[in-house]
Each structure stands twice: as C-alpha cells, then as structure tokens.
Length: 474
Picture 1 (cartoon, helix red, strand yellow):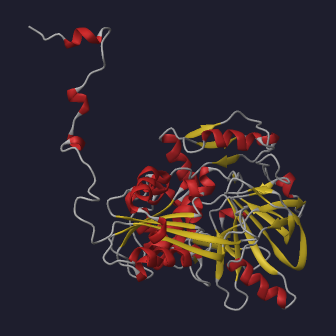
Picture 2: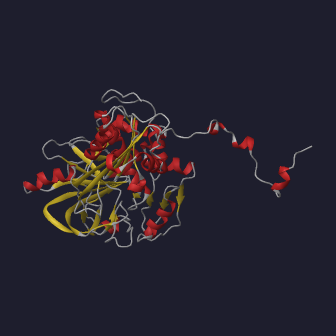
C-alpha cells in the first residue's frame, strides 16, 4: 500500500470504525452485537457473559447493577473486526496502521464537544459510573478501557495509552505505570514537586482505541495517529479542569492529576498473561471532574480476554514490522501469537538471503520491545498465522546447537510472573532452511491439484447404506 504524504487528509468517507455508535450499528446489522438482560451484576457477571461471547459477539448490558449507564464490551475481539473497522482487508491491517503511524494528522479543537454535555465537579466514581469487577481475586472495580492522556510538561505534546485503574475511593484511582511515556512525563513533574495533569477517556471509537496502542517514540501524540486512521483530523476538546485535549466524541472523560510523592496499595488484578498483577504501592490519580454525554456508555475490557490481547497485539505487530524492515528488507511479515498472549512470542517470516540473517533478525526483534521474550524466524513458505506451521518449522528446520540464540538478564515484562521483577532470559529460534541445503532435502510435499479440487462437485454425504453406493450403476 503506498504511503500518503505527511499530514494529508483523505476526503473519502470515514471508515466504519471512526464512530463508536456507528461501529455498534455495524455489529448489530451483522448480528455480532448481543443485548443482555437488564440488571447484570457488575461484580463478575458482566465479565463472565462478555468472556463467553468473546470473539463471537460484542456485549451490551442495559442497566448493569441497576445503573442508568449501560456497559459495552468485546468491541474488537477478532482480528478481522479490526480490519473492518479500518476499512481494509485483513492482509492490509499492518500496512494501514504503519502508514498512519508514519503520517499522523494533527487534531482539530472544537468548543462544544459531546463529551462535556454533562459535567460533575462533585465526584463519586462508583455512584456516577458502572465500573465492573472482572476476575475472582481482583482487588475491586477497575477502569480497563480508559485512554490515559498525559502531557509532556516541557513540550506540551500528549501521550495516549491504556493503564489499569483501580477505583480506590470516591475520587481516587490507583494506577499501574510501567516504564513508558506516561511514567517519563510524571517523573519529570514529580521531580519538581508538581502533579501531572491527566484525563481518562472511556468509550472511544475503535480507530482511536487502536491508535492508543501504537509503539512510537516519545512526543508522538497517538491522537494524531487516530486522525490518520480516520482520514481526517480527530476532533478534540480541552478538559474543563486542565490543559489535556480529549476526543470530543468520547462517551466519558475523567479529569484529574497524577499526584506527586503519593503511592497507595493497588492490585491484585487479572492481567493479559492470564495471571494476576501483584498488589503493591503504586501511583495515584486524584479526580477533579467527570464529564460525559447526555446518555453515555461505559466500555470495559475484560482482563485477559481476546479484546485485551488483540488490542495490544496488532498495533505492536505493525510497529515491529516497520522496526525490523528498517534494518532487514528481507522481513515479509510478523505475528504476535495468541499462545504468547499477543506480547511475548513473535513469529517473523523472511526471504533469507544470507546465512546468519535469521539470528540478526532475532536480535533486532528482541531489541524492538522489551516485552518480546521468544522469537521464531521462518522462511516464506511457512504461514506464521498458523501456530501448527510454525511448530512444524521448528520441529524440522531447527537444531539447538546451531540455531538457538539465548540471552540472559534482559529486560522483560514486569507482568510475566516467571521473571525476576521484569528481568529474565530471552530466546530465539532460527528455523530457516540453510541456503546450501540440497534442493530436495527441505522440499515440502505437495499433492498436485489439491487446492483446486471442488469438493461439492466430487463428493456427497454417504447414504443410509454406503455399501450400495459402491455398486456400479447399470
């Protein structure tokens, strides 16, 4: 797909994922939106139903726990849905996301946003919002689909990301900040004894949700990547209590400050690796105001579910593909496997040109993001989206004494319970065919004409007595 010039605005109709309510209409029209009986319990039951429908249908919960605001979940719980939301074929998702990351479109500020139709300056989060409790040992209700928007105190450039946010009291949230951009901004303000202004935006369109997960350098506003995905500038509005700009069409905005020199107990919480993030002293957000639409919806992402995994995985694939191709033009495709929780296991498909290239690609991938733990590099004839094919390549093309890359004491994910506070070993498998191998040694078997067979034309279900079908007709 050719790249658009920087800051070019596409004047064609916006993709269906450019609007949350339009996306729900689209899912409903294609019978992928399930409306649940009113009154679902916010403690565990919302998550239980959403998990059962995960990957098959989004969920809409009217009056959850008797609350006037409905809950929605499972908006992006299938790879193909993300392609639909972007308006491209599934094979073009990574290219489209990469194009948007490279060609951001500046946002446009508006004065009367939908997200500020109702303003609460007296805050009681559990009373004003239907915040679910998901997993058995979660420490309480959590905001899980909120975009945490912060602002570089020196440059004013914003950062957008998703963090788990525990409701600790009527106006306080416990926040897990991993070593990324939000934490870098906060450390700068905290060193000066100042709080960091933030906003938590709940109920975003699918394209803005995906844009929030882009892995880009510091001082790259993900709302501008959202604009590129929309094909036009994203409309934003300034918060009523601080300088943060938020998507104007969002459902709910929680405005506040990350408090300098304040830490409180947060966790445990069911995370994407299918384990609980531990309880510890963590950062604190004090909430100054809550604004929302006149009839808002509250989006929740169930911890460890498909929406949680894929929302983080696919934008990371696009970023990793661009990162590797800068140094290795032979890289054709990448895939973060679901078995590796869409974070830890990376499969890379290459057109191998020289010996040792596979190992260099492994090293490049491990340096691309600290979450990457295991890398498998395969040839172009292996489908990296099929885990059976990747395992077959490792089984038949890999020898540990020559093809294994092992690195100890590397920075990894703090949410991986097998690490030592995020420090552990990393491993790469070069499962490519040696270039000097005899032609038939690694030749894959193939039955000529197999893929062209029209099964409906040549086969029928066996009748009541299959033996009678063996008797030649006269």
